[in-house]
Image (cartoon, rainbow, N blue to C red; front, side):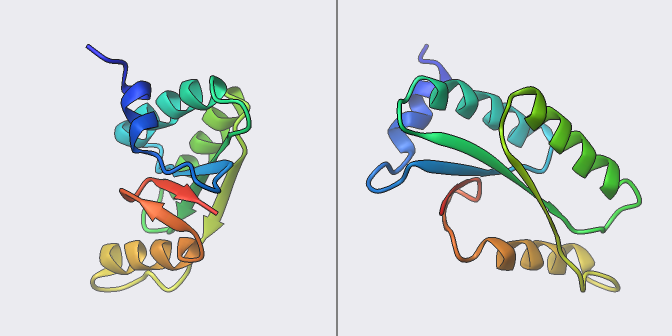
Length: 118
């Protein structure tokens, strides 16, 4: 079986891209991707990896998730940007939170909702 990082390398666009950003929620899926991309990028000269955590403030533990993401990234020496978004209270707030997150990363090219190149 091929390592996940090798499969990721096949999927990532490389033309004109030197830095990749992971939309990092801190959940299991994005955590696995962070580690896989970290291993992959370390073997690719000229490429770097960063993480973006969108802090929606939707849950009481949102600050702890942001701290968790920053700590995991720091342990891997990966730059982590925590982007705070507002306007996500009331009915349908989860959906509005996703929309707010999408707006803050809109200037970047996004693949599969997790690989971002700016």
